[in-house]
Image 1 (cartoon, one colour):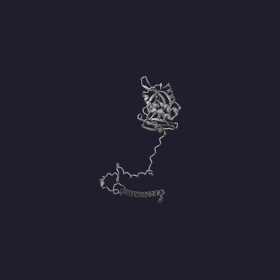
Image 2 (cartoon, one colour; image 1 turned 120 degrees about the vertical axis):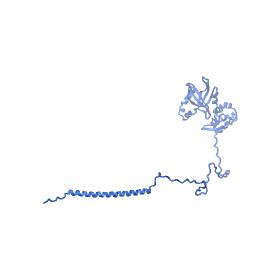
Image 3 (tube, one colour; image 1 turned 90 degrees about the vertical axis):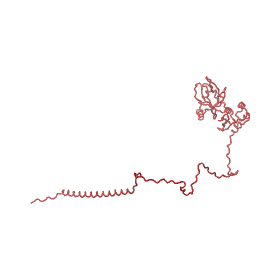
Image 4 (cartoon, helix red, strand yellow; image 1 turned 90 degrees about the horizontal axis):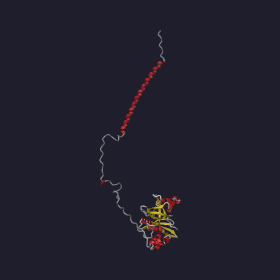
Length: 331
């Protein structure tokens, strides 16, 4: 008898089933790929069609530009009028003067519309004294208005009679007991100071400084003075090339111009010692006002000056003595 056929083994059946399943999967993938390609093609075509319809051409085109129409110029006589106006507004040129407003009626004297002129400020009492001093017809009448007329008598008499002519009187510094003015004359047009001192219930002119400044005595003495004379000056120390002398600048007060001169005091003399003591004193060193004055014209002092000459015959001023610090007259 022939042997019976062997039954199929299980693993042979499984392999055959796997091949069938793989074939069906490949077919499905192919179908899906075809469909996807169709969809992508449709969408791309649709988008391109929309872009051709909605996107404007580029600003800079390579195509030839169409010619523009010529500029239309409107003749000034045929231009349209402004809206709401029958004619152009009339404008005034820069040289036209606008018409004056109608004049107001003159105010009735004493009426409510009258404006009183501003009252002048009353002049100080010292101003009246100064005017009386300048207009006095004689030296004796002038002596009534000066401080210490007995001491001023000889120089007042020497000055003589007659009115003292001035170009102007200008108030300067006004303190409680000292009023300062600037007088301008033909010989000193820039002006010189005059001081009035409160004394015995009134005001008196400091004759000594007035006579000195009004007659420009410092400049005259520096030019050709003889002997010794006393002066009210501003004193300012300066560098000296001679170790035996203290060098200073002595000046007439402002606003007098070009009246500053070098003057010398011996180092071993009385004047040199007084000048050094004054400059190194605590009151001068610690006072802002005195330090400011030293930076300007110097300190106000009364000095005795003389003229001398060096070995070459050149003249120079010598400070013989420092009388006092300040210009106030001695009581």
